[in-house]
Length: 612
Ligand code: ADP
Ligand code: ZN
Image 1 (cartoon, helix red, strand yellow):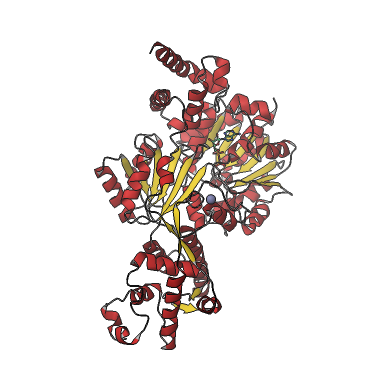
Image 2 (cartoon, helix red, strand yellow):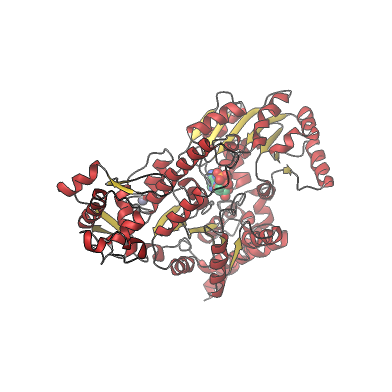
């Protein structure tokens, strides 16, 4: 069989996606490879297809025990002999899997890196021909990455112990040059053929809103995605509980997840979400690692996260099956303070010396600043994000809130001049303040803490922006910082100061414009990832059919068929085997297992419609 035939017969896909075929060809030729592709791009296919074509066993090293079960279930569903070895197996199951492996009945064996050192594992390796070792989430080997796993360092040693060195394939979604070098060096890859497809996920819509009422905005987003799964990320456990409760009070079926809940509640809430019993998950960033649910159709950030790496990773959990999905950030100025507080009070690096800690803190502040720019951007969000990750991008993507014009442009030159004069006048008196205090002063605050300065009587710029709402005033200062018309010091209490540009703004004819997010962006309301489905009635029928089967077989629904597959059925209306095989995601195995049931529903639907 050719790679193309394997793709069709086992996985039911008609063509390879970007990068897949190249990597597979190189693997088949015996070369080490490294694939750098964003979440949802389809890394798994890159090693699963050659694993089926090569003699012998492929070992897949994966850091997430919770994912292994899912991946193995999905492979078996496609008729591919796969198994996993990790600490969740009973001794009996463990032995059973081992003997299957010994009998050559397993093509893909998933294992946690800790397993590699065990005696039984090394014995397999000595007795069974191993065609390939695949390292998933390969960035875990690097201390530069966010998810360093010390046990990944043992992989190289394991490879050395093998009687014959197999080809190695490494995959990751995050790779700065430092991390890439580490992957090659620490895994001992031999001149790997490297494919980097770029970070873009075209099916994701990126939006930023600055709603006065975040909860109302959230309700609108949920309403635009009826019956679809979504994740709502909040910055604190307390907020998770509050938002989840409020959603439930408003008739939304929602559940919650954070590190403060008992193991049992976490597991059961997570399952409720995975198995589509509850569509909305409200969670802290503790939720998501190891969640491979492919039909998440929206990810809302109720607060701005601390950096773009986290944001892209979390938002990227939407739309893994390639269907259109929405990633929306609900921003408020307060989020910046909360994050700064978290950075300053982080206890994560307590074991490090003061100097290193300060360096890390500074890097964190820098990243937070970049994240804030994203949230207050006026030009294409996707472009900004892709460039942050080192990709090039067009300046207009057409699929983000900026490109879709959810902003009103406003000339703020006059306000900019007022802000700058205020900072200038204060500097003349050897006074420096942060953005919050400058806002207060410009708006003529009578707060007690300013009394002693007697600004009202002595400062000409006191209260000159009293008519500008506080939030807008803060945004304007933020915008001036982002565009470097003014500067801000580092440290715990950053203060504003003037720079070379500031004077230009007062003297020369420069204009400053700011884009202000409209309250409830029309584009998002109109558009939803639910809509591009023909025959929505049938879609519902097929969905419930799928739920029934999933419940019976105790697997998440998307393992039976993804939403994308169901939509394709509604489009193609297959009523015979050939037709059913043409549906995206239907291979031989799924045709055999589920073809009859689903085609019966489709036939009934067509007949019903004809009679009406
Ligand atoms: P990653 O590991 O890169 O995050 P996955 O391997 O989980 O991504 O793939 C994401 C989704 O895309 C899965 O549902 C997978 O079946 C699907 N997919 C992968 N390759 C193709 C393809 N060539 N055509 C259609 N769908 C694909
Ligand atoms: Zn854009």
